[in-house]
Length: 139
Image (cartoon, rainbow, N blue to C red; front, top):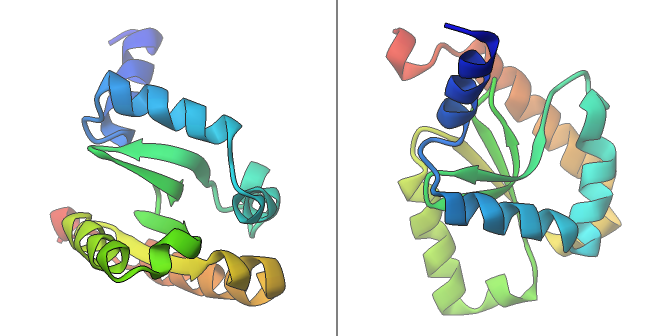
């Protein structure tokens, strides 16, 4: 396997079969992040949080995770005002359930903007817990 095909295989696996449309939409979302997403990304990018590698607006199958850590299979979702509506809350719960192989942490935009250190502490704790736990496939 050549380096190029290894890279492509890795990218295909890390996107969990996301379509080219989902990948394109994720690229667009990276350019149009909310203020809360920008603030959290500033703290997570370039392995700033205890050298944990996160990706922003990352395609996973039919979803786009606001932030994703492949090593820990950890998804971080930020919920703005629209996520407070009952139908959106239900959709978010269903979406998290469909992403069963991942741990999904949800924070409101307000939590990120008003208490970033607490949010980072929760992310750090979950990352450490997840990265020490063997995945179901390796058990």
